[in-house]
Length: 238
Image (cartoon, rainbow, N blue to C red):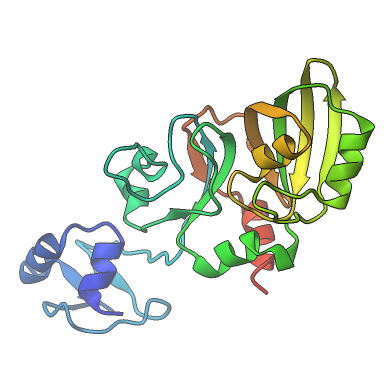
């Protein structure tokens, strides 16, 4: 990797600011001062320092967010606030993106990363990574509805969903349920409920596979994955 790119990627400033660091002889590679930003360095072997402080290169970032409502799952938008807008500059410089989209009014677990391979594995129906949601639904859900979800329902566009799991926590005019799906069609949970004559009033994602929402995160808060969580996610890439 080019030295100037490494410095920019590790938060040492803009291209202009990195150039100034080099010019002022503040950057060393393997204890030798380097002024040429085009020099290539091995991020695993070479020791790079700025003002004597080691530079630690990190290729990927993995963040768990408790997505709040009224924020869209996108990297940028000219009118709406996005989940990336909630991040600090230290995380934004990695150019993370949301893994799978949650609707604007849907809350809960959202993974943000710049690891494209992992994102594909988590969202590919072939991997059958279950996504579990808590929902409050207008209308009384029945065992017939649960059986329909288990078989897969036909959406408004004719698409037949993969089998899903519907757990009725509390019945009644406003039912409380958990739903696990294994794909991610547009507004899928809401459309599946509409297919059985019900309407979702509140929706929150609780988990993706073995990755569970940290309940200590308030809406809009985020943190890096723990070692165990990261180990699980990386195992999906194999």
